[in-house]
Length: 87
Image (cartoon, rainbow, N blue to C red):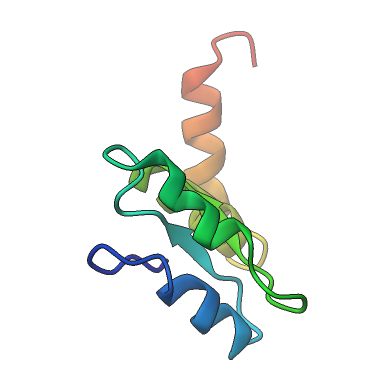
């Protein structure tokens, strides 16, 4: 998960230099909604997930980790079931 100061450049730079999934938070999205475009308009071959909320960034990371980690999967599944009483 990347988030640094008032810039959106960290996420795209990290994503272009790693094979790991990168989740980028736009730190100034509430004050300056147009700032998100600098993260969305990345060059080709620069895979990046943009998330507006820090809580959702954590959940997205937990979803990725749960693919290979049974404990992370159990935690995520428990939260899903707690949110939906008809599950």
